[in-house]
Each structure stands twice: as structure tokens, then as C-alpha cells.
Length: 400
Image 1 (cartoon, rainbow, N blue to C red):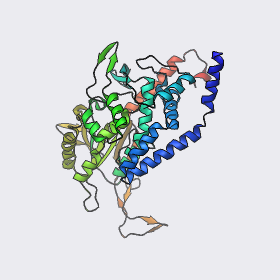
Image 2 (image 1 turned 120 degrees about the vertical axis):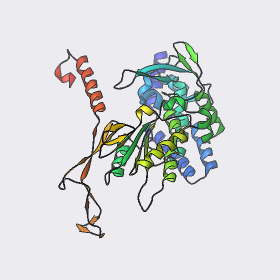
Image 3 (image 1 turned 60 degrees about the vertical axis):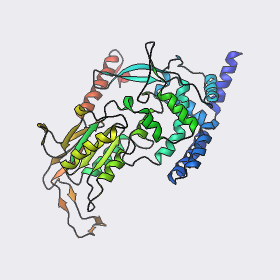
Image 4 (image 1 turned 120 degrees about the horizontal axis):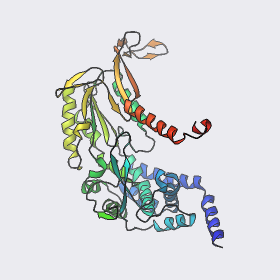
């Protein structure tokens, strides 16, 4: 009898019209986005409350954390891992109201290409489902506000978009670059600062506060979480983006366009960012200004991972010789001097084979190249090496 019930529930779960569910939820998210974009905050809050109570949105949130996400097999402090369709329906029911957040389970995972490990805080499946639900309500509102030059952990944007934006910014000239990294970004965000930035229905804010203050269990030892967002939580990337939102705007208002020339461009991918400018002086000022801007957020720039370099030539900075080019998101971006036949050109736009503005083409004398960084290539070959070692006795077809 029990087996019969289980198979019936599994059948019911599979029979849910998922395409329709996604369509309905997306329609509601679109309305939140449009309300937030046109400044109708009260309407956006009302729609957010509606979305969080919606049965379809809850179904989708549970499906996301129990079937779609990579960490679906990772258990939280309650040890719940494999989930039957019956338990899925129970979670759908339980995440409707406000839950008491359970502490996170800390696991240590190795950093790619390095010997050190970084901590991850894993919430329980129920907390993850509620986080996915709250995220689906908050994300459309913030997507309408986020800066166009921030790319990390955003729907419809990838690392390749950030790289192509860098290429567009530098391929018509040579520039100075501030390549910076924020130290322990996820672990140090100031909770009060973050919560003061988010204006959402009070029930959702209560949830956010609970998740931030839930604490961590490391081998049975409980620790309080005074700062930071839970790395490993579904909603953490969104919260980190909210905390860092405004940095790009701050630099752009400090250095607006002059005579149609961009003075400083900042491109951010999660906690990594670049500042691009034709002037070394502006780059230094940006470094100081961003350090000051990050203080109330509870963050600071990591000095050993921050460098100032040039895209085309060797420069001497702070008594160190900096090679041309820089690594960003696993790519190496650099300009190489070339002869007139291979050089990029600048100026006169063509239409239908004719120059239609009077300025002739100007030879740049260099070309911009983007290729995988040595570190990324090494990490990739190490991964391949691991697979080959694992399949020593397997036939060739299986290895391939």
C-alpha cells in the first residue's frame, strides 16, 4: 500500500505542467520588474507578497533546490539528502509561512588551482527552498536597479559578457588597469548595512535577517555569524550583489565623460572588478575612492591580489616592474604591438563600402588578444589528468 502511495505521488509530481508553472511565475516576476523600474514601489511590494504566497512559485522553488541545483545531494544540519516526491509536497506546504532558520553546516572545499580550502555554509533543504522562493521575489526588483556593468550571478549574464565588455572598452586604445579583488567578500559583509539597503515586505526582511544570523555548526561546535552572507546559500550571490551595488555608479559620477571621452570604466563580476582608464592618476584615485566606499559595507581591497598595470607596455609601479596585460575570470587580456598590415584601426565609419564621416582611419599599431590564462589552462590540464588517472583500466572509448 505504501509503495503504491509513493508511486502515485511520484506520478503526480511528474504530471505537474512545469512549462505552465514557469510561465505563470515569470509573468509575475515581469510585473515586479516593470513596477520597480517605473518607481511604483508599493505595487512591487504587493506583487512580491503575492509571489511568495503563490503555489506555483513554491513548486518551482522546491524543484530548483531538490532537482535542478548542483548541490541537491548536499545535506544541511538535519542530514536530509535524498528527497521523495511526498517530502517535496510537504516542503511546498511548509515554506508558505515564516520558518525558523536552522544553523548552517560548514564544509571545507578545496580552492581550484590552490592548496588552501574555503568554508561553505550549507543550509537545510527546507531553508534552501524558502531562500529560492524569496530570491524569486526579490531578484526582479533588483534586476531593474542593478548597474549595467555588473555581470556576476545575474540571470542572462555570464563571464563571457564581462570579457566582451572589457574588449569593447580597450580595443580602440591602450589603457591603465586597476585589477582588484575584495578580501573575503562573502564572509565580511556588514549585516546592518545590507538590510538597510533592502526595502521589501517585512515578512521577507525577517527571513533575510534570520538567514544572516543563523550561525554555523562546524563538527558539532556552534558559532555565531556576526558578518557575511552564508556562502552556499541560494540567496547569497544576490545579497552580495545588493551590497556591492552602487560602486560602478559612484566611480562613473566621480569621473563623467569629458569631450565624449570616457575617463574611467569599472567592470564588476561578483567580488572581482577592474577599473580601466587612460590616466594612471585617475586609476590611483579610483583605488583610494573605492577603498573608502567599501568601508561601510564592511569590506576592503586585498592588497596582495591588487595590481596596477598597462594593457600594452611594461610599467614600473611602486618599485615593481609590471608586465603588460592582466588576468580576469580565467582569461588573459593583453595588447601586442604589430605592423601596419595587422594593426587595428580607429576612426572613419563605413557604410556600404563608403567612408561617411570625414576622419580617415588611424592605425593603432597594436592588436588586443584575449586567450585563456596560464592558470586556467593549468587547472584544466590537472582536471583532465585526474580523469585519465581515474580511468586507467577502462577501455579507450569509455575514457573519451
